[in-house]
Amino acid sequence: MTGDQRTPVTVIGLGDMGKALAGAFLDGGHPTTVWNRTASRAEALAARGATVAATAAEAVAASPLTVVCLLDQGTVREVLDPVAGAMRGRILVNLTNGTPRQAREDAEWAAGHGADYVDGGIMAVPPMIGRPEALVLYSGSPAAFAAHERTLGVLGGAMHLGADPGLAALYDLALLSAMYGMFGGFLQALALTGSEKIPAAEFTPLAVSWLNAMMTSLPEMARAVDSGDHPAVGSNLGMQAAAYVNLLDASREQGVATGLVEPMRALLHRAVAAGHSGDGLSRLVELLRTNP
Image (cartoon, rainbow, N blue to C red; front, side, top):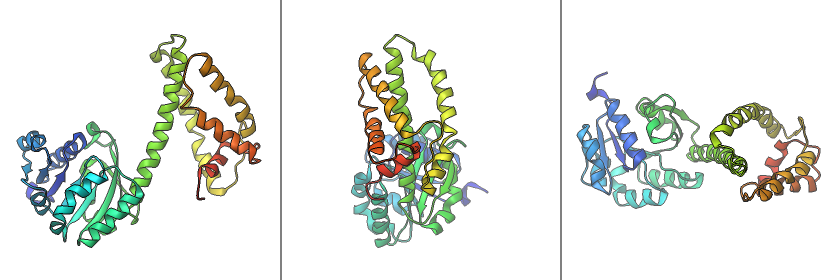
């Protein structure tokens, strides 16, 4: 396929991620138009062959596919509301981090202006964009995604989760929740071991090995959540609630704050108080749901 046969793409928003997205489209041979409120951020991309639009409306009009990656959803609407008339007949792919509710509202906005909408969650950092290990989750218009799946594929693996535009944001934030939970526990561990002058680099290989071993239990926990049957494997919630206090006491004794680990203690004790002491950890999901 020659360059002039590749779908033209517009990228709005040239922070670190936006610049990486635009660069990947350029590397993939796609005619790429860019726009950013701070025009100087487009200079390096212009040197690589990107067309720099003078206005957001001009940028949207330049391509059938517009990819937006801005600071937050409020900024998305600030930029796109004034150029809504240019969206008609085009496809909007919004890769700005947001919530499922915001994605659904943006989809309604796009439909009201005659545009197809696809929401996305980028599971990668900017240097990964365009590489096989990058993953971008999409949801929203199946037809729009199918039409441009190959184009979006230059950014990394492209996974469409369904027609509900809120699904990509839901999966994105769920995965980030798991990541931050792991990072929070690791930081607590480094603070604890560091209180005895144990180098972080010395402790970390043991943490990696332990966490990898523990992750093998996740599929079984997932099956328990789906079935509603929560067998205890190894130790039940009652035992874990009784032992968890040692983690808090040791932290205080070592001069380490407990803010990261207090919520889990409270959740364990709620489960025991509710009569679930003989169950496994998967039971805690039900306690986290405020509206099951």
